[in-house]
Length: 105
View (cartoon, one colour):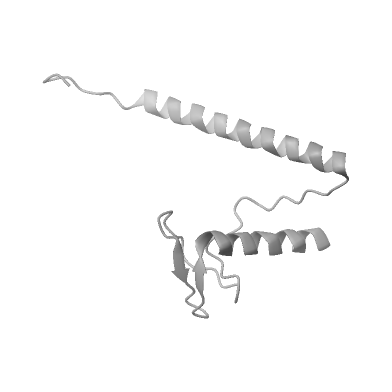
């Protein structure tokens, strides 16, 4: 970079951020559309869990909801029951259980 030159990071960055968000939303929308189509094709039922469901920070053993976790945290201990959880396995268990609960309702 030359002396005296500056990199502008104002409007362009925000615009790019919105574009990235729109692309991400479209991609998830397309994935959801295809999943619905495949489920209909094979006679299955698709259950969609709310995107704000706290699957990562909710203890799958005692159901206590902890504080927000940084993405870098891969293992954590529940303050309620002391169970040690792998972030991904715990989220998968919670999502499965919530999906089954929604299916039964």
